[in-house]
Image (cartoon, rainbow, N blue to C red; front, top):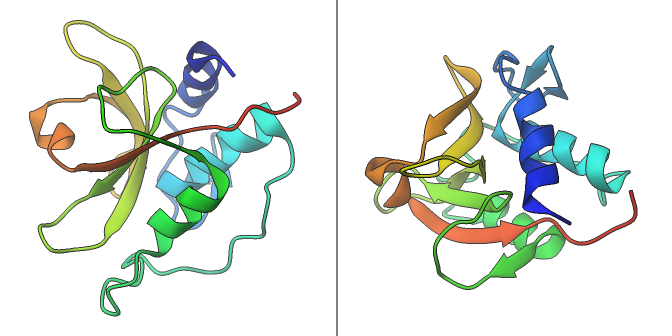
Length: 146
């Protein structure tokens, strides 16, 4: 699947308000909801029903819940420069679990990341050094029928 298709779909969500556990463009989404919504448009039905989750992503138990789910359903990529359409997994705090997702956009001189977070909704931000240093894994959507 082309990165350009992923980016175009993710950009349709820009401006969607932040709503924890939501995944409806224009209505509400969190970071996982954005990725789930892009999946539905590009690949069809989601592979599993997502159980309720808290904003801590199992941080107190030190479980990498989001990372494990990404490994099961997305295609893991080796370390390297992010490319348009890649799904990035971020660890927001030193010593914490990974609990934020974003989709790499396009742009010069640096790429951007399309993501949803509390207080901002779905936005496209520069993939600046503060974001880059928090990347812990890189994935892409699997190839599928659309």
